[in-house]
Length: 201
Image (cartoon, rainbow, N blue to C red; front, side, top):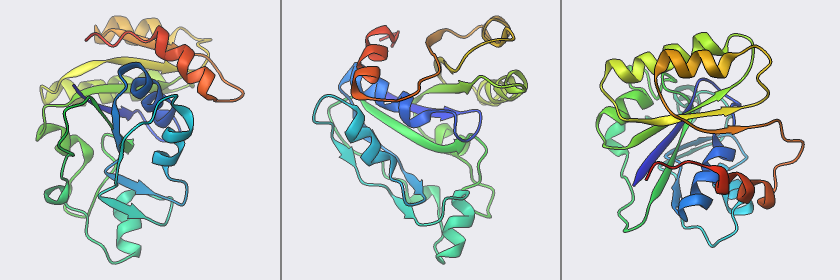
């Protein structure tokens, strides 16, 4: 099973959710494009309770900005042709950068294009904030318009305005997990949510 973790925007909790899926499936982890000094791969290793196999990033960039800009600042060209999915006999969790339409380069390539070239199932992480309904449904419509496999939705945060139900009912997609606000994210928190996760294997 190969699962691509994406979100409706930045800071939605993709790495936290990736750790939960890794823990639940005892999966390997790969982030093709990493921007910024904090490596999500290191965070994954800190949060899971087993010796996770972390595969090296294809592009490891210094500035915490959009991949296309971070690459340009280092005179590097990101291309989907360079993406080489790890070959393994285990489940693999793949974490994207930002959302589906975050640009990878100036040629108009996005993570959405990468998904079209693979048979990965997609999990969409939805941070609950005012405006998330619109952002979530737009992301879901993009995935559906390209006939991509959507495994389900993960909600992150407190739902004070009925967003979960409207997104679930309009999209018709399963809710795999709803994460509440967490003051601290620890191995114990990840393990607890991994036991609640519906992976639909």
